[in-house]
Image 1 (tube, rainbow, N blue to C red):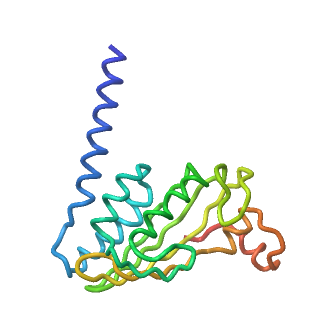
Image 2 (cartoon, rainbow, N blue to C red):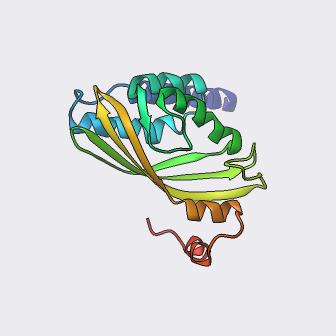
Length: 186
């Protein structure tokens, strides 16, 4: 009986997860609306970044990101393909990476998200930093312009000082080290 109940629970969770994923690619409103652009930001920062399947990430990116995506973060290559190539690097370095969305703000041609990145550096090095099991938790803000119903141009701000201290980067100015030791105030 317990085996049947557990099998049923696993099936229910699997069906719920697949329905949630399918719904995530169904916009709640027409293109060009604030609600549509909020959906774009939420889908990127909450759904896409937490998706473990590269095939599914590509499917999502093809829907929400313009092919000629302009990337103002010099660590990530230009275009949709740049994201396709870069996101797996995160999961290779931090297999337990998680992205928690806090806020989404949108207008008819922009969207902004604020989220937290957590993970443990156990895989391949990240940004030239060797893995030693370092735990990270730092905040990010993304800003996008929206064109033709897709994320088109991107700017971001990472809390790199906190991330670098957590990753064990040496030689940072003491004020960064002090700030990184303070508790978060989200």
